[in-house]
Image 1 (tube, rainbow, N blue to C red):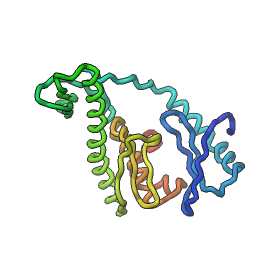
Image 2 (image 1 turned 90 degrees about the vertical axis):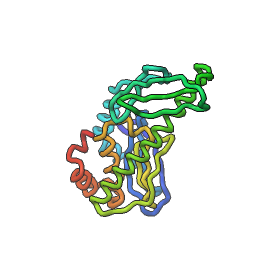
Image 3 (image 1 turned 60 degrees about the horizontal axis):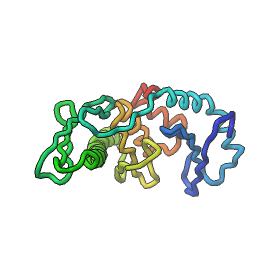
Length: 223
């Protein structure tokens, strides 16, 4: 703890590993450091970044908490920063829900013979699969656009079903993203993609890295 900031330390034994501070959507502060970094050095880093950490924590706290979804007709769901209604249509002759995005709404056909509870559970699973598949396609397009601009390559893109971070870049040049990222506005998604693509060139978060991010997203601090 430093300046009343509670944080978790994650150490890595990898040879090439830079220090970083990340804050999860659940307001957890995570300090990522190589195994050899001392506690005093970590405390110093947290003190130096304390203003940024506190501002970020306050900004997360000020956001409205997402309501629990029940997957009912008329309920609204996020897609790139906008909320769209869900139209639930009971149908015969199908075994599992079929979900698509049509004309500014989510349209789901559900088995008419299923109970309301089973319909909702099936819809939840169908919605999460849809986010995963759509996110994989759209984020891949965005990654390809920015890697082409920088003339760099990556190994593969993975959308995580469960993740406490929005994006990461592995030492094998795998780009990992949170499935729920496509709920955010396009400019925020672009920022996360740019951030990870820039890590293909700069593995650290020092000035050269942020200058490269800024060259692709001049308003990156807001995003």
